[in-house]
Length: 349
View (tube, rainbow, N blue to C red):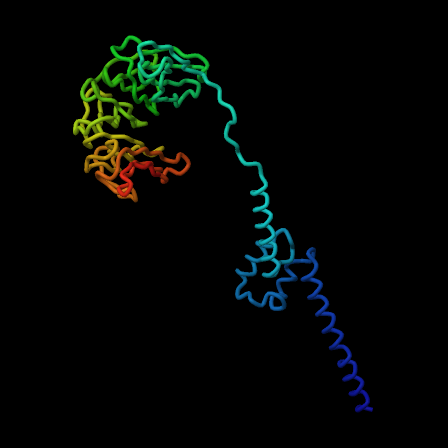
């Protein structure tokens, strides 16, 4: 009797074990396949499909990457979904409408000026050499005409009024608003000198004739915290002259100190950081050894040369500089470079 009972008990366990094994296997498979199953229950199944996991931190990270699904996705599935998403993004970027430049422009002036005293044309127009926008009012602009003085608009260019007709000369170069106080404006009139306005450009006063009388300023850089601190690039269009270059004032333009010698063709300060500035000594078509790019890290007090693929000295001429407003660490450089094999000057950027 005992032998029979023992055999029966063994038979029952033999049948039960496979059944339990099948049930557990089905439960594991269902939990991994069902996106609505409990994530906590799936966590105990890591060795089944996620045996590459080595720590709970990896498991938790996988669950986070798989959200909002309750069941973590395996590696191949996640890779496939990422590839599909990347392909979809590329398609959208490729097919999305691209910004287009304006197709039409409206001339708001100046109109042609009939002239009988000009040997190279019966009609001329006033050349605009500078434009400054009021940092506190986008509708308020000042422009400088090559031989027409300073003009002002307060309605975004619809109407204009002359503001410097009382000066001894109408030749105009650079104009700049003080970024921290737009009532202060500086302007260069090469045959007159340095002008300054304290009412946003409505009226002007002559504040300096040395070095600005007989010399034009290509650009101004004005401190946003103190409009009396100004750096100016003074350039010549003709022969080398050590009296030109980078100048600096700390008393609103009354007195200036020369910081770099020879014609300065460009000057920019880093947006939001007046201490960092770039300047170029760029006598047109070379001819002097000091031509090149320079950098200041102390608001224009001292300068150091910056090397670049354009070279230095007599092989480079004029420079133009621009700093990206969105990425102040990016400086764009255009420069005249001498092409010696073909004996010509080229513009490179």
